[in-house]
Length: 227
Image (cartoon, rainbow, N blue to C red):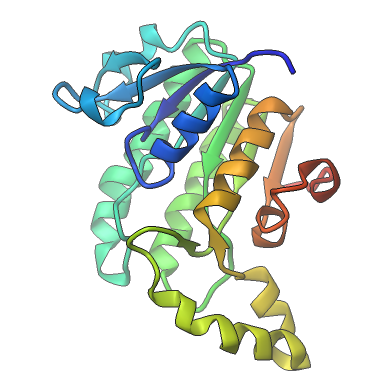
């Protein structure tokens, strides 16, 4: 396995913290964007980059020498009432991230998007779709990771839905939706993200929930699913 240089926005978050630790454990070099004062949330061994995720000018010059740029910034605990925040934070941050990655001539962009269509969170889905479009318009090779809901520490309540998902997968009218919007775990997300980084896409590739759930065996799980 060749060591990669990776730049991460959102490295101190729910998924980013676990991803950063795993990349370092696997011998990769990690540059992590963080606000001044938040350095203690990063694992030892990171290259700390101070900056504002909503302003590419504050960190673009520090992205190099990254091979991959991983964008994980977004509103915490997204909900239907946070439409304005999705546009002011999620959309603005991906716009800035794409600009920074293009300036740094990063070869592979990894974007945390969302599975769709879904019956709720339409504004969230719309913003993430716009984010994907920005990546495509920039001409970046990219992997879009599209979970619906990620289980993990502090995010356990949907476990109660697991039996309902099992029933829905059996019934023909609900089978497709249950598979398309399957729940995934943070460990599965980290495994999928690591696989995407270590196996960069040429062009655009998307990993849906059913792909993410097989993240423990990426050599068999992921083909060349077009976005």
